[in-house]
Amino acid sequence: MATNANWTIVFEDKCIIKNHAEGASEGIGYVIDDDSFWSQSKFSNIWAIQYGTSNPTDAVEYRDGTPHSTWEDANLGEISDFTTKWDSAHLTKLQEDWDNDPREESEKGSRPTSYSS
View (cartoon, rainbow, N blue to C red):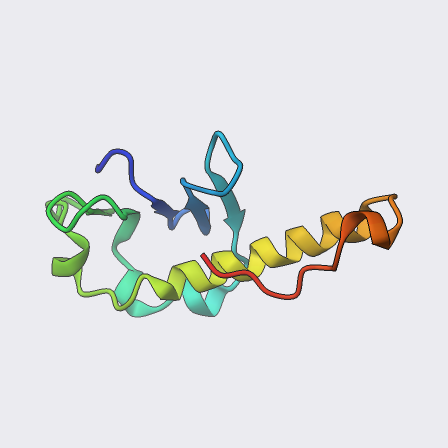
């Protein structure tokens, strides 16, 4: 598995982790509860993905004995299929944090309305 990847995707847990999140010393992961997304046939043999190191070291791990491959060789589509889902979950978290912040609106600024990695 690649090291120091920007993104880690764990299919068993339905989790997408951004390892370079703003202001975080550790990655921030979200469980994406979308069975129709995770059950796509192209993902049926995927165990995990490390993405965002470089093409030669990005890694796709398989559930069976298939040797690991690069993201490019795995032909799984665009990484934005995953990052967009993370961005949406993160925006929801930012909005919840804003909503639960007891300070006056003038002190905490505008409520977040978008987020893009």
